[in-house]
Length: 120
Image 1 (cartoon, rainbow, N blue to C red):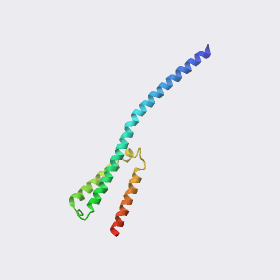
Image 2: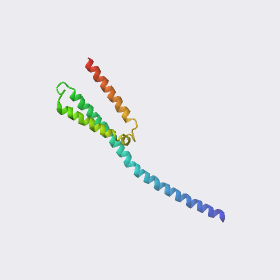
Image 3: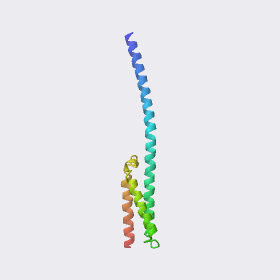
Image 4: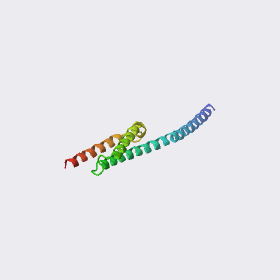
């Protein structure tokens, strides 16, 4: 009789434990999902602003627009916005930890190509 009671207690304890684990897993999934989505969105935003900044810089350096005050101030504003967003690096690097290194590599390649074009 004692053995049967022990089995029942273990079975009930196991069921309760599985139920609590399922509830905690569901809760964790609901909490983490929005954070991951926000991280992905902010990484996309960062990438797009960086791309926009590079495009604006390339337009500014064209002979037609070189020295234009409006484009110069727009370029400066873009740089300030980019610097502001870099404060939130931990948020967007949550899902893409090497994003900044990749962007820096792209920037370096871009500047090297520009330097080569100017030399020619």
